[in-house]
Amino acid sequence: MVATSRWGRLALALAAAALWACNAEARPGTEATRATSLEGVLATSWDGLEYEVVSRMPEERRGGRAVVFLHGYGAEGASYVPLAGALVDDATRFVLPTAVLPHASGQGAMWWEFFDGDWPKPFAEEPRPDGPPEPSRQLPRAREAVLGLVARVRERYAPESLVIGGHSQGAMLALDVASRLDPPPDRVAAVAGYVLLDSAAELARPAAKRPEVLISHGRADRVVGFEAAGTMQRLLERHGFPVVFRPHDGGHGIESAVVRDLGRFLRAP
Image 1 (cartoon, rainbow, N blue to C red):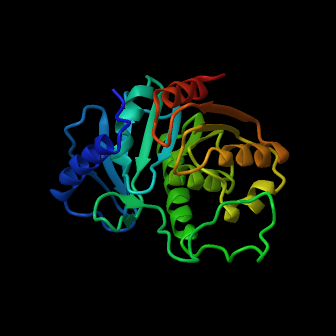
Image 2: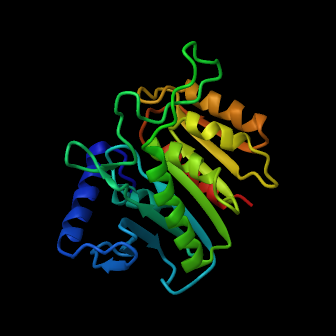
């Protein structure tokens, strides 16, 4: 069962928070594993970044497919455990980190806050009349945290295939991180996101290999307008990225069509 509502994701996030509260925090540079009542889910932290691992594979088994999936604004890694559970198979391991910044509401987390003038702006095909904004001071912290986690996943699990994905704010960060990974991931899944202006130059940089990118976006999305998907597709294809564009009739959440398209994308040859 996949929790698509905000309340369903929040309930999972709060349950995970209650489990973590019973354990001491890990010191930076150390790994800590906490008990969880969810079957097939391992709650872990590394360098202060907490994450869930959802898999049918034994923890000591290496290889297979690793999917690092980044949550949206105000959610947590645990919010996407139902999604991972719907998509996992015997050769797939989902890694679901929680952003290091707590949300202002006290519930959930965020990769960056929308401070005036200091948040990663969307890429626009038409030049801004007042010139490009300054690069965001918040994005590097989120980027480095995820880059470090991906390096950890590669070292620990040695996956044969690596996918970076995300929803909303997480989709924006996933594409940014993917453009800076060396070697690059095999695939990128961007659900209900847009291209960050801070990422555009790196996406345009010549590369020997481009990951395939899934763009999933709802025509009725009132949080990130549907037009952002077209802008993303055009920019990526212009720079040689193979793109799978999967629009659907839903809104900003994880619709059943999104789950279906993600499953097909992950398992495509």
